[in-house]
Length: 494
Ligand SMILES: Cc1ncc(C[n+]2csc(CCOP(=O)(O)OP(=O)(O)O)c2C)c(N)n1
Ligand SMILES: [Mg+2]
Image (tube, rainbow, N blue to C red):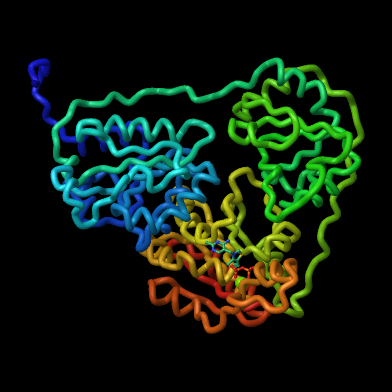
């Protein structure tokens, strides 16, 4: 059988996989282990770090934040079936975030799989679908490193996203051949003919629906709502709409009629072929954004046109009452230069846009899926990736509770993250939605009696409670000044 083997194989599947991770520059592993994963960590190498999360959603969201901040795939290790199951909401979010992840979960030993053993994951590779770009349980132990390499390359190809490999527990100690790391150019360059068509007109309308634009820029007009009729109203009067990679048709509520104003044309550069396929209107060039925009800039000079009216700055809010707007204004005033904002506070998003402008390219993260529980652990992943920068997580009191165990990991790693809890004692966004649907009363939206400082202290994190505007600045200053440990600031807002 093994007659073709020329030299003796000395390394295990585990060695080969860790060699690949080294070559990929991914030496941080996020996880929550179980019996079916432990052999992966035999003789855990010194040049790797293991970041323990106390719940699997936390592990995946931390890896998501880390992957986005490092622009490299995050590696996650989860327990078979149940551990992966706990994480699926976060996998969905990573998919929507286009965060590259290689998720590895354990599986029972191959020889006992026919007997439906304890912890057996039936049809393991199907479990995380359709929210992984590629998923496999390799046919043989020797195929595990190749599968993990493919998972990595697939995760890193635009549009980036999570991938999944199920690994039977007995595979890690098997010997296997090396797998050479490869370089893969993953830039899709847009069709030149389509780009030429778009370039002709781009400069006529510098109005894009993308939110990741410096919000203090004179041409910045504001945020489109995730609502068909409102988008049409915002764009009324324009005859050309150019979309640069933005998810412009992400509707949150039902809408009817046109998708863009009557008589307008829509031209889109997008790196995700599926978005190009389902977009309801317009011409789309599937392209890597950087090269697409570069190609556009190389085109003919734009026709001169007058700049649109500047956005009015929001008036200052007084601290007479402690509102979310006042809180966000003070965060904007007091936060250190270069700090990173991670937002998950649904009903305060509008106030954030008004009082906490985002002007740095890598200065803002939020989840693209609407799935709560991402912000707190993602902030920790970002802090692990950017140890010199202050990370500030702005969390609703509801949102803060989905993955509160993340605080423990932040404390263990001595990360100076500031967690600001906007405590309005309810799911305010759902109360608003209840009104939209004409509900008299919305059940399941009150959140009395949550003591975030106690939850923080119980996990080794300092908690500061703020009940009035006069105590806010000092609490924020204390938290922002702490470089070596996390601080939670619980702010009771009106
Ligand atoms: C995982 C998940 N469960 C439920 C929801 C539905 N949901 C949307 S907004 C919201 C309320 C969030 O409350 P909080 O963080 O306190 O923010 P507030 O609405 O009070 O600003 C909920 C529960 C969701 N988006 N994701
Ligand atoms: Mg709330």
